[in-house]
Amino acid sequence: MTTHSLFEEETYELIAGVDEAGRGPLAGDVYAAAVILDPAKPIAGLTDSKKISEKKREVLAVEIKEKALAWSIASSSVKEIDTLNILQATMLAMTRAVEGLTIRPELVLIDGNRTPKQLMLPAKAIVKGDLTEPAISAASILAKTARDASLLALHQQYPDYAFDQHKGYGTALHLAKLTTLGPTPAHRQSFAPVRQATDSGKMVKRNP
Image 1 (tube, helix red, strand yellow):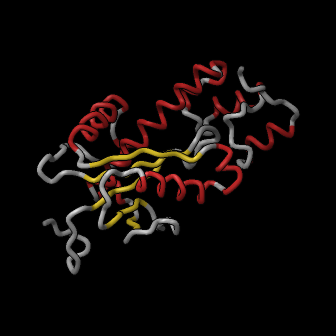
Image 2: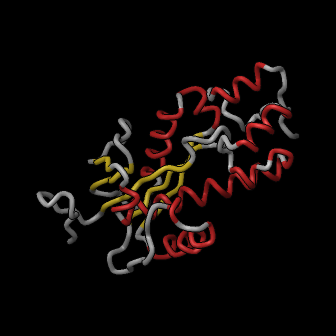
């Protein structure tokens, strides 16, 4: 039996950590992961995925998948982002990640300041939880590595856009590509820079 440090009044055996990756970028799906760690198999070095190198994230992702009691990665599509808005699409991806776990958690700890309304389990939001809760840190790493892999796939599909460099974020390089080439079908039309590029009359057709 394990007792969670933040909630001494309640005792839980199975705690799932949940985090997302890709809310801010102008392109690509938004990803979420859920992880139930095994107390008998500790993993060193867990923290916010943004604070460790890409190489270290990849190593930890393998270890998490090997040692966790259960893990799940899910996403919401660009179409869902544009239809629902990015917040609701993120909540949907988080719900899907929890629902994909092979073990039902007793408590879900979510990075941020809100929990998905669709989640039919006890849940608590923790601001900067990826820095303080190992299960959320693990979820952060799985979500980040999965999303980065999807952006490398987009780079193969649209090599002129340098998705391998900016990972879809609104960097100067990415904005310059949008201005000169126009958006691809992988871009989020509901985001202002993409909408502005679309209004300029350029649009890349989907590859066959």
